[in-house]
Image 1 (cartoon, rainbow, N blue to C red):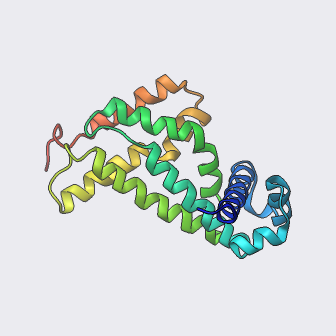
Image 2 (image 1 turned 90 degrees about the vertical axis):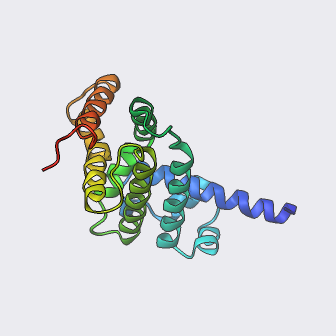
Length: 190
């Protein structure tokens, strides 16, 4: 990569980081391109040149965060304790920002797109890390995946950690217990 290309990529990364930082703490509508440009140390025109505007930037931030989440969520298949610890590492870092974005999906198209993408990634991750316990493809597997999704959703993390004030250890134990209770291999099927 040449020096010019490296400088362009560094500028782009600064803008993405600035936007992600601001949107992690504030409502989408409360953050302007000027705020993002100032945080990144660039002009508004530079932001527009790189991303086309606020929605394009929001989509790029969502893509960046999704790819980081995929890299950070490495857990061995079937190890419930490791899976939960990995998930909590992610939620402790990004859960509050995720909850803030989810609260905006009905009025911010970029947040809705990001949430849809994240839901698909989370489901695929669950399919991979719980592959040892999920039934063969079909309705039973879909049901089991839906249960695992509900048991590991960021909203449940928020309930335990933020609303009920559980310690991380207690919240992790609760999630492990819930996941153990829904293990399809241990339940009677009707």
